[in-house]
Length: 337
Ligand code: ATP
Ligand code: MG
Image (cartoon, rainbow, N blue to C red; front, side, top):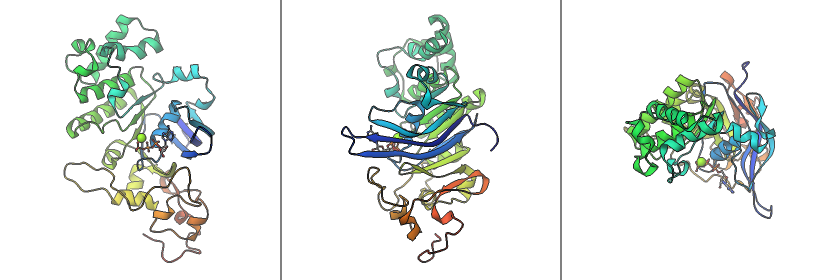
């Protein structure tokens, strides 16, 4: 890829360290990813695989126990890890915005919708209250809130769940960020509202040319929304590449297991179902590949050393010994799935 990425993570690791430093949870380990302007990257993986930690790392909104021992996070060519807290405050909400799973956690029950949608515009752009409120009204209109003028002076509890989620979306795009990170933004919505919300996000993306990082358990949403996909397992990105390529020919046994576990349900609800076995304890990872204990294709090399990231077709990359050129050698039995 020759074009400069909007966001490029290079070998990023994020660990949670216990108070006495005895336990280190390797929530994100050696992750390299890139997102181009206007593109949508989906991140999938089982619960606890490090998706939210990765998102919070990008915004540097990690809890105090978290450390970033290594890596670079280049956003428009600047390393976010080198920025001061004051500089990061100017990035957050303005150049990179985030939408969380639970809209109530992002909205303050004590303030009006107008104040909350207008706040980033006032903070980042120094707009007057009147002009920020006028912009807030237009944003509510853009996210299809009926009677936007009247809604401005209401409080979050006076909205439906779907409206609250759209308001959080309006706050997310209020300063026209270049990148919007959405961490499971639709799990609390019913299916019809969910579909409407996803369409709305896509419209906003097209209108504003923003890039989207979309964290989800739902591969149906990935198929619908995303250009690129990163599959996380135990803190690592085990496979990444164009969605179409990965859906057509998944290279990692974990990705294959995820794709084959999609229940074919008529209501379109496609959540990941369980794969046999448990994900490992991130503070006591086994040697070798973290997926080996659950992998139907594991052979000796997999338990001995961690697989490197191996380039595949169409700019895809996979961390799996099966993809190594000499994968056949020393393998116990037939490793093919
Ligand atoms: P989910 O799909 O359930 O949202 P996730 O992929 O977003 O999961 P994270 O929330 O990033 O996963 O958690 C990754 C790992 O880090 C988990 O093992 C989790 O227990 C651990 N973890 C998360 N937050 C903290 C914290 N504040 N202190 C210690 N460990 C944490
Ligand atoms: Mg999460």
